[in-house]
Image (tube, rainbow, N blue to C red; front, side):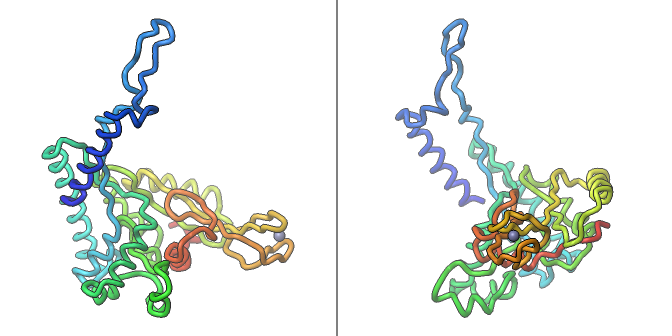
Length: 284
Ligand SMILES: [Zn+2]
């Protein structure tokens, strides 16, 4: 976090230079009042800029220290809560010390989740440790590491349970919801749906339960889809062939962080995560 602040200072200095030299005309414009023709205040208040520190791999951090993942032991989960709480307090302290608003938040970081894992695995000092906790396909890494850095390994994003954790959806909610009030924003609770067509009343009931019984402020229901590039048919699940016309020219659509995207554009770690995901047909 101290290192992050040093980077933020470089950024702030750089932005000040840009503004001083009038290289940010849109954000710094002062629109005129249409009636009085007087110049108004600067369009974007850059003084109020929030500098965000995000986390990746909290689950792997506690797994490294305790030998268990967040859903496998109460101690491991408590260490995650404690670490995040301490970081949130420290972020407040840094904000005061350096006169900038520093937020501890969950950031999208889907590329970082892979990058950190790959960086650790190719680093002599960290390789042995990383191999014990990294998620994904380590054999594929060993086969391909000389050829590419786009490898199917990742650290679990943010403060989530690992995508493949074999727990019920409500257990997942009960373990993840405590992190929502700790971070300053950006957190999200994923409900990855199974093959079955969801019952609208079931979705409604589960949504209400999350709203009433947990501190989760933001949740998504996601269903995988197959899009036929031949006949444009959209069907549920990840199919190799279009169920309507039989074409194998299909793309898959799913959610990786906030958005639904075509899986063909994902890096191999994201695709691995899609494979590892525990999906839920029963919402209870
Ligand atoms: Zn088709």
